[in-house]
Image (cartoon, rainbow, N blue to C red; front, side):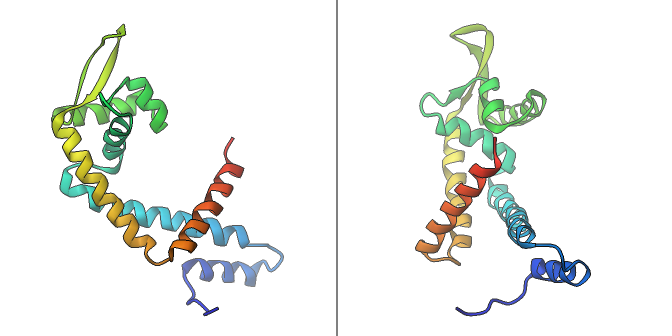
Amino acid sequence: MQQQPADPVDVITEQWARVRPDLDTRAMEVFGRIFRLARAMGDRMERAYKPYGISRGEFDVLATLRRSGEPYALSPRQLSATLMLTTGGMTGRLDKLEHAGLLRRSPDPHDRRGLQVTLTEEGLRLIDEAVGAGLAEENAALAALGTEQADHLAGLLRTLLDATTE
């Protein structure tokens, strides 16, 4: 197997090895790279969604509604729970998306005290385009791995995520 060039995480763990050789920095190697990868991909995704006039957080709202299937409607509470957002954080996103004409809020026909958030036709068109642009970015990054490696990594990350969540 070919030796890979050192990356910033290698530099950090080498520094720790010099000053604290008693430490096992294997976890730092894994999670340091995961954090850096998440930040780098987050930046790429922001750039992918920018032409559509939405942020990653706004994409998440539209994508959650789209994934819910027809009629592409959920309550603000359902959206907040799915996206792990406070209701205050959700309100700001909904306000911006509604103002842009990408969704509408209306009384919930099944609960007269509640609201329903629904994608508009423009919101549906936009999210279908934006999800394609985002996946193109993710697939371009994943191209550094072969299919077998990508599948293996996905399985390893699933195992690690399962072990670290309650």
